[in-house]
Image (cartoon, rainbow, N blue to C red; front, side, top):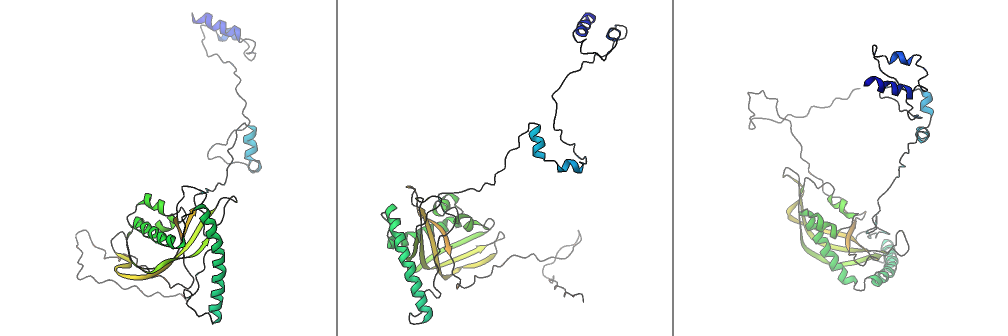
Length: 318
């Protein structure tokens, strides 16, 4: 049965098998052998080099994209994309510059006169911005907003101490969130608002637009002078900064923002302005590991009689 089938296949492909001189002899039953049929495959214009092989300098000079395009391979175009969030702006537009000494210099002096002139200029621009804000938020008032800003500030810091991410996102903007949570993963924060030394006051307002002309954002700066306590502990429970029992007077300039065009927008904490004349912060006490003695497996460490070795003096090479 196999012999007639092989003879039939050989008869069909005899015109293409010109290289085989005697096909009848190859297909003989007494000398069975494999049948080779030429099959045409797809021509490959581009063959990638094998792993570990060296490529000539001439191949390096050719454009790989042109070679892939000739082979029918389409490379995906790479775009340098940067995410844009329209619910909040990326910074503080025309930030408020607190006067040195909190505007307590006399207007009769030269420095005090400069402070007064700058304050009048900023107040005129703030009044125009407040008018635009009231067009989109009719219930906005400078006195009521200052108290509301203080409540937002307290709620945001309470959510930060309890690590409530959902509540914190609703109280701070996408720009302020990483600034508040950066570096607090393995730390314990204890914060408490004691009292307000002075009533909060709106000192600055701006209403800029972004991307398009009608896309308005309202930014209001509030001056808040209060008494707070702050204590930061590391992951080992050691105090790094501040104290829970000793309150401190804190003068802050908070920036709150709202997307005015969005009817569901709300005022959120956007940033904080730190004046150049502000005192330096307290240093952070970090945990340092003290190396112990090299003990044998059968020895025990005696912490009472152990003395910490002093660091060796550094000798500089002459």
